[in-house]
Length: 114
Image (tube, rainbow, N blue to C red):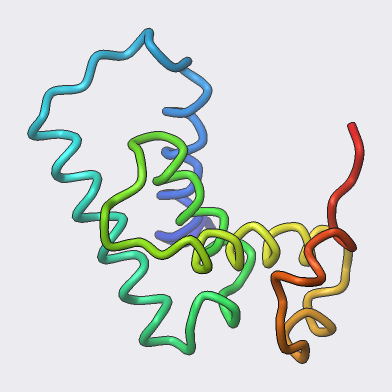
């Protein structure tokens, strides 16, 4: 069974795959997406912060940003931590990442050349 969060992330992935510029969004939809992103972020903060987020939660936050733009209240560090959580989860080093201080400094450890 698919959880609500997984379904949201799947919908965001599909929206992003539809292609930038090919989908014209009404301003109302952009505003609703910005509010949904802020609610997603708020929940992450309440549950222990972005650095403690699960991979699916960090990925969802990044997909909101990629698909609809960055709401003004987001901090760069939150986005950076979200990227690191997803990368660390995929490399099997999520526990290591959560124990670290100065996470941004260690970002290069998770960057995989294409």
